[in-house]
Image (cartoon, rainbow over all chains, first blue to last red; front, side, top):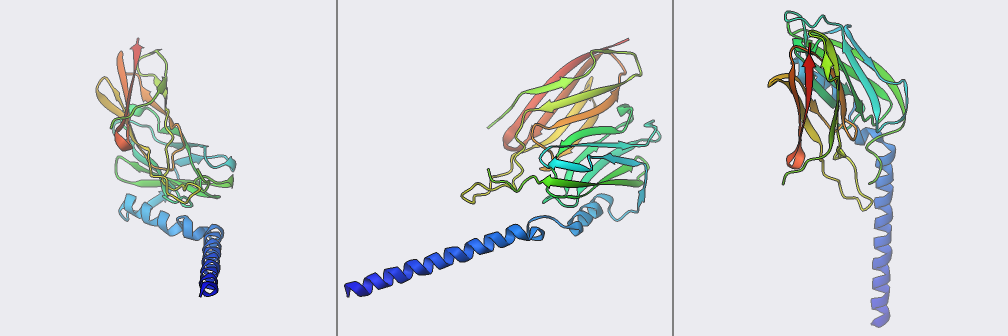
Length: 162
Length: 109
């Protein structure tokens, strides 16, 4: 009876070990399939759709500057400038920055007024992967303009452990 | 529970009327994205600054919404036109009741 119990507990342990191993494999799997973890281009499209409400986006006017090669995705200097006179009749209302490869495509939104003088904004962002980053500007007349920049990230943000 | 942190503003203290001035605003904040896990597999909850507002003599001139895609210690550089002497007030607000306020004076000639 005692040996029987021993065998059972051994069996149990082996069983558990196997389970844990399987779990480990699964976890490894998700590491190698980034599509499961990060947003895809479609998510970014949905976000852009939400911003524009289906309105047509024209190419141009917006310049997005990011380094073409980024060593560390945790702090990337990003500059957006929109070609606009910024007068009371013709100014940039909002600028949205969207990263198609981030877990959450939205990075930031800024609201400008004619009192801004220029439509230049600089900040530091996180990039999870090598990807294309979009900037979409809405003018006061409701038209949308976009610009984009591509970058290569060697060390990505958001994946590291704490 | 209310939190706050150190902030810093860099901008000219005087300017000619109508000149475009550049303002750099930085706040000390981890901007925890809510996408990171601890080694034991627990998700670290999101804790970020959500909004930043700049008012010039109580008139809003600039506003920004932040998402987890903004790096730690968010820095934002923007411009405004120096219209009159007065005070610029900068306000950050975020998760868990985070709030920070900073002010800067400008003399316009």
